[in-house]
Image (cartoon, rainbow, N blue to C red; front, side, top):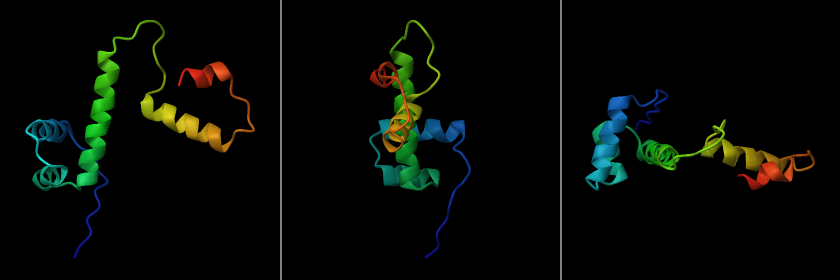
Length: 95
């Protein structure tokens, strides 16, 4: 039994292959075996790609966002931990 840890990012070709296999309704474990990555990496990659696609489709108008969805979640968690610091209600309502 050997544990293999991947610290390298997925390249663009791997991401395309993951999307293609996912569209073919392969399981995360099957995709992971074919790509040579853990299924958790496949899951996180699909989630990230889905979030990015939602942001692109929404066709935002107005001011450009400085943070993505993941940054917003982390910002809210940080606020909940350090709630004694002041963060304007208007800022929190936008998240």
